[in-house]
Figure: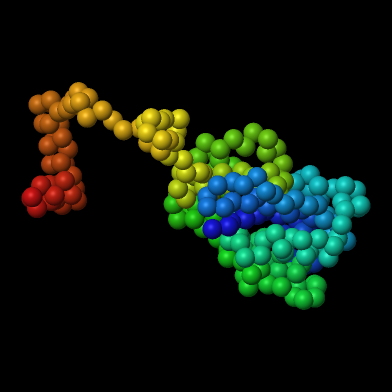
Length: 236
């Protein structure tokens, strides 16, 4: 499966108020592995960037003055994402802006007609209800380095989100059975354990630990009815 982890920066909050995309960052993932192929562009929005937005991403009107307009990059951007599954944090925001930009051109293109869309924010909220699920919080939760993220930036945020998404949805960014081992039989890379190895030690609970466990189960039974542990014991 080809996925594109995508982020945008904009002149403001709402495309219905005429706000525009000023930066697009994309990271390609194929079969859950980063390919190293990215797409990144700054865009002249042909309008002022709001001061509040500049405080978030640091992209100024002066910086954007000589950048291409969206119409100039629309085709190459569309070809990069076409047919892929887009992974976006708070997808409705970015897709809304993308559809507004494509809607100003001919032919009119609607993102969902050409790409799958996965909202990583929705996934995070389902996995971690009641917790903060912005990108910084997820980086902390999954141990992803975001020390370079002083301001928002589309490509940097897409790269960070790619790591977070892969960890959040499977904990593995690439499949490798090698891990540096060899069995000497032609390079399958699978290390087999010695059948004559010593048996693993079995550590059992002490009498005091077993008594404490039963006391705790008694407490659970009083508070919430028969505990799952005792229900399982009764079923055996």
